[in-house]
Image (cartoon, rainbow, N blue to C red; front, side, top):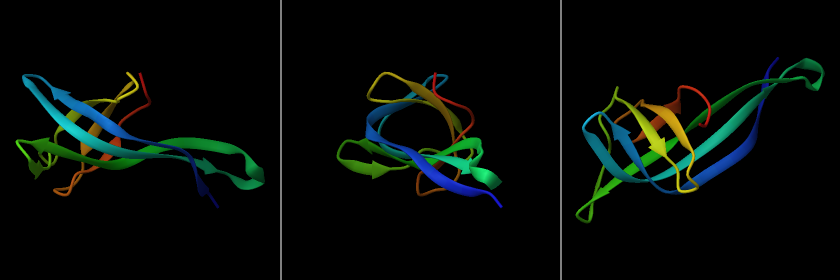
Length: 95
């Protein structure tokens, strides 16, 4: 049985970018690692929420869209917008 454990939490102010689009956002991401039987480390997954802030209004990016999320610390990660309330899932690791 796989048991996920949290290996990192990342939050801050960043931006989402796609061709011809850039959105200022606040983000909170959680990185999980599956722990396999015997304590063997497994795959990592990253999920979270991004909230766009424009002219004092709260908005969410378009569902189904793929963006590069630029984190406050300079790293980037590609994320897929899963729901209308800003839930995201990473499509790979940080770069």
